[in-house]
Length: 385
Ligand code: LLP
Image (tube, rainbow, N blue to C red):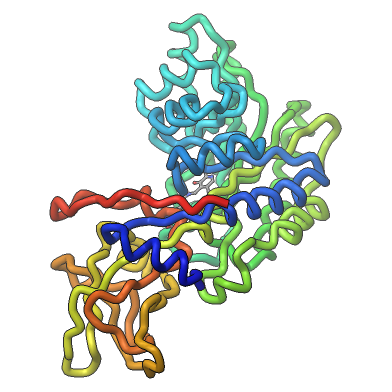
């Protein structure tokens, strides 16, 4: 819950807006570093979760690398002070401009997802008279037990090279002296809360490593992706994710070969809890079965509920003293029935002008905002330490 002092600050700010608690971000980064440094793991931050400059500044200072999925994310990372050797570039559809840009900047590694992509990278590296370092993104066919829209490691998904294609890919790579194969990459999905899934991933990676070792192919870097989930329900008690248990699983089950470095790409678990969407109630409208609390924020600011039926905790920050709970559907102003943040929620009686907080919106919130309906964008607020 926010202090009265902070709520007073929000009152004077045009809504809707995102607010980020930079103190919490620093605490999260410190916890992540304490847990990962025990094993000498290299952790990259997935910019796609949130690429705000203030946030990137803190993340850079914490020593994380950068995981980018577009040319503009690489640009943003470089502008923010990440060095090229800290940048990995993933994505199933990298375009020509993006590949050329990444080669020109000598990024650390391309995570390659298909044979046709390898051919294009090789061609552009040749044109630039450079060598491109690549890791093969392998689709490990491990179920992530998460929403099907954010599952990426199954054969039915578009991501990665399937295991049965590996002999062909390795054979084909012999034609490309411009490519230096430095490792393997995996990412099986996001918002993973069943940590056994990561144990299954480790087992599969061990098997795949065995396959490469039997062919005497040496891989210096193993990147196991991201995906660690956050608690959208019991927010206050889980502001900092359990990085310790997460990294312990890899330490216990992943077989690391001599001289190998292990990499991770975390997004949501770093920034999810530090962001909140603050909105104001425009109207309270009586429906037939429920009341509607109509907010000035909608799916244009936070699309996760509409797109993934995602739950975000909703709080009335300014209830009248002694207000009792009533039941509401909390909705946005956009002309779409999916523009709904939560159904049948019990909240202290809501009135026009109340401030509503939508929690755990730091990851995949502001970055996924859209220009639909030409709605205004209000300035973001950063709470200092
Ligand atoms: N690495 C790769 C290759 C990825 O595709 C992703 C996320 C990550 C790392 C970071 O995963 P994280 O640690 O944040 O789970 N918009 C969706 C989430 C999409 C995730 C896409 N990939 C949502 O709002 O839930």
